[in-house]
Amino acid sequence: VISNVVHINESLNASWTLTSNQDGTFTFKTLGIRPIDEIVNLRKTNEFIRKQSQEFHQPIDYLPMNVTSLSFELKGNINISLNSTAGFVFRRSTNSLEYTTLYYNPLNEYLILNRTSSSLIKQFDNQTIYAKHLLLTRQISKNFVEKELLSLHIFLDNSLLEVYANNRTVISTHIYPSLSDSLELGYFVGGTDGTVQFSDVSIWFNLQNAFPLRPLNTSTHLVNPTVNNAAIHSFQLSVFLFLSCLFHSL
Image 1 (cartoon, one colour):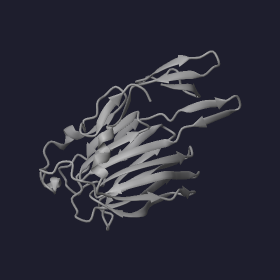
Image 2: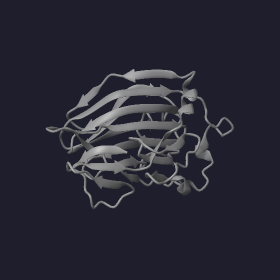
Image 3: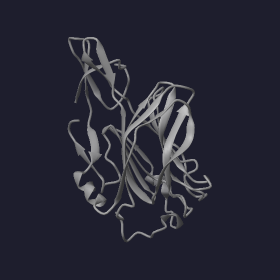
Image 4: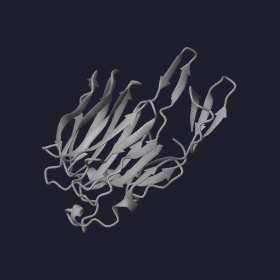
């Protein structure tokens, strides 16, 4: 439940409800989704890095974070101006033949997972995934409104990927990188102009294997990968069950 919401399209057909208030604001209600608290147990013996805040004023396809890993957990906030897009690149190979890009477009309000170059395996269904995601604006005081930041919580375990956005939208899928050096992680900024700010970016990398009996190279055993793609909104359960649970209020 989020109160004092303003500047929202009342007629938009989506998986939430709006209740109008006497002061002209709205109360926004939806079903939230977030990782289970026990997921921190996977961090116990991992390497950790907290990145300094970064501000960009022009597009950049890839800026490395100097982190390489088959698996990681990443948390971070992004402030994106209207004419920009921004997010992260991961499982990038040194020759840039393989990489996956996750970014948000504030103009059409979509969280986008571009898997076009995720894998060199031809059988892999590398379609781009689009998840509708609103960033809400709230009335803080009579003369001041504030738009929430894009808050991302990303889990990658070799090929399995799960992305949480503001605890309201989730993408769960596979990316199947095939090159042994597809390990790099970095920033992405697109669009024409404007400012993008990354803040509170924390990364746990070289995580414990969530599926220790699984083959190390899952890319060699593709089985019906098309059924593993899902853009999950408020009233759908995450298919990546070991990470997620539902809760009733934000």
